[in-house]
Length: 110
Image (cartoon, rainbow, N blue to C red):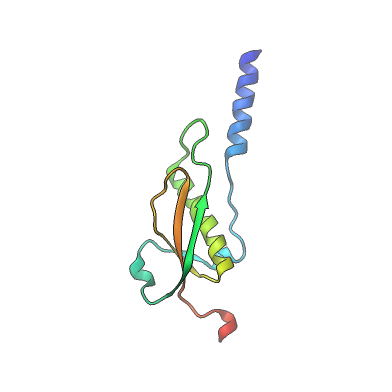
């Protein structure tokens, strides 16, 4: 009986700790690039920090964590008026920092 309760509790913790990040409508127009050379001619708007759960009982898949961090950063960059993000730190403890750039004319400025 105790074993069943423990299995159920672990399952609940695992399911509740998995973050499914949704990209906002503003975040959909933000691209992720890996190289600062790509943004040399762009206007830097600032930085955003993203954080997700990277470990519950075990380490989560690195690619999934990276994708969720990028999606969160895209959402934040969209709020800042950015259209491009570049990771500026490695992933550590489920955290990553991104630089936000505006590389394209916004539709309102044409």
